[in-house]
Image (cartoon, rainbow, N blue to C red; front, side, top):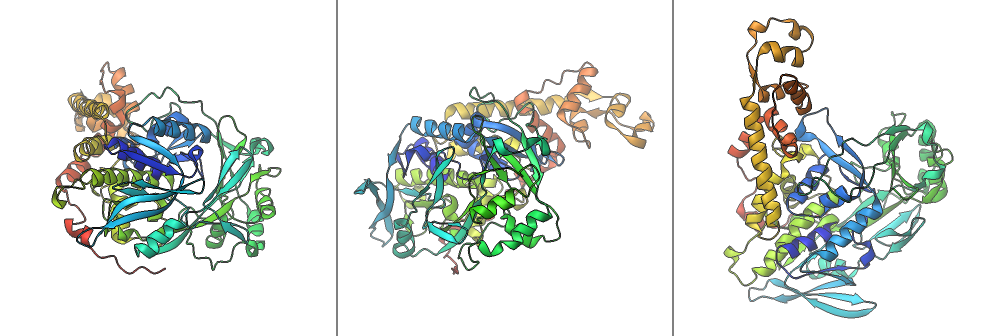
Length: 593
């Protein structure tokens, strides 16, 4: 995901680009949960789309189950999330990559990055050493982006067994092959560039055969109807498939007893990798929350034409027979069969404090990093870093001959987007565990909503990195911005008497008070009231014979702006970058392995 966004961004920004991958058929592969978005993560997907990225359009085309998380709270923390058909998602991404102008896909293994040394003694990217079917070759380039995911000296664990690999990838629905790790690049980073490396770990649950699940014993969770879109550019994806039901079940005390009984079958805790705090294995949940009698398990189909089911919440790298005992202790899964056992993967990452805010490696002109190599976890964080690194790699190559002060760079500020928060957190503070995005990390979160990412970023990106966002996207953004302004103006112009709006929007004792003490309210005022939303306001206005005329593509943003007008004014007024121009020259703090 980091690689595809980086490659397509670089190509759109005007650089002739090569995407080097060990297997072309795995471009767009969803190695873990086939889902996109969530709280905080959904904001990143919308921002990637606002910058012209692939992910938003891909999930719109391949999504089979849509939910807006956190709807009971304010719109600033709503989290769009969708379950994907794994095969459709991969096919869309691969087709988009192969159709991208300026971009060529090279099936090979990247072994090394080669440098020249400038007159000032700084390393400058010259080429990437690759191996095609064991035959060495070089790709000359002025810049490179490394997006190794979990492959950088990757090691897979199943029980106490371990072997070098980056992940399992499916050959067909019922068999999988381990892909080899990237070891040569680790030497380049650690030895040649003297970058500080450490280890992280992530895990994935077993895949179940849906034909062996007792669905009637589980609680169904339907997809939202109507579904929403992640992409601002295409609000009506023509390739959208149908939707499916997901189901909810839960672990129980018997499950937890099995987890405790077979703790000794897991890999020893002396392994170097630090696992994710916010997406822990079932073993860690039972260990940390011993007072809880159950933990939720979501049963999520992996596609429309497959029986594979992803049991979200059952991550753990026990031996296969232990995993079967755990699974079959859960209501609805008593006869469930495991198609592919869960596993953990441990891998190297680079201390992100070695990078600047454009994700360039300090002291190595033209070299950029993105994705899990920077210490993040999740498709969405990887895509966000990929699009920034790819755009800056292209600008670095195109502006190589310019004076340093004239070179362009794409940097998103913390006040402009969650991508800015993500990058700034990593390069300023670093991380010692897999970094996951949350809305609580953004101090400007009231203004950085998922509904207005295009208005915040599209026009700015078109100015800072010409070509990254196409003219048709900029035109669509301008049209939506005008529709939002027109919608807000229409709501502020519509006025309603207290005798009309009182019964519709007040509850309890408030509704019984005299209308004489209430003011007239505009449509914008009514939207700002508790429990009011655009659907309720439009229904009320229609009953009063008033057509508000708010464009459907602008409705969410209009409603959010009316609910928190002060937030956007404050964000625009207090434009304070939380890093200085000199931050890119900071020395990297000591990093403990």
